[in-house]
Length: 119
Image 1 (spheres, rainbow, N blue to C red):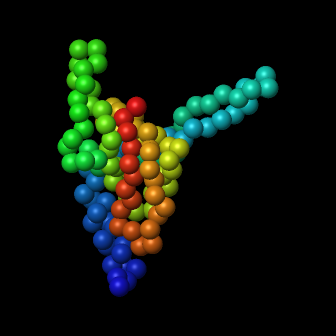
Image 2: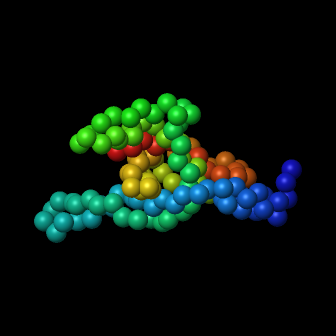
């Protein structure tokens, strides 16, 4: 079993491989002062990340407004122990991704992986 120092070294090494950044957004709900509520997305943090097609490149491309638009499932790799939830969104590279599966953190994980889809 790896020592705590070795775990830290491995986590840092994996984090160095994450070449993008993403903003984690959470939906916040507040009173509107008239008996109802209003909701808005607010930044919960910024972390390094990698975003890849979930099935190794099988995401398909559609045309929207005369421009290709990438659609489909994605796997997002984040630093170990990142606080990410299935109710969150990720904003990265000009795209907004909705988290569809954020498994419970594993003991002694090196990275955190979640599934997401482009919205």
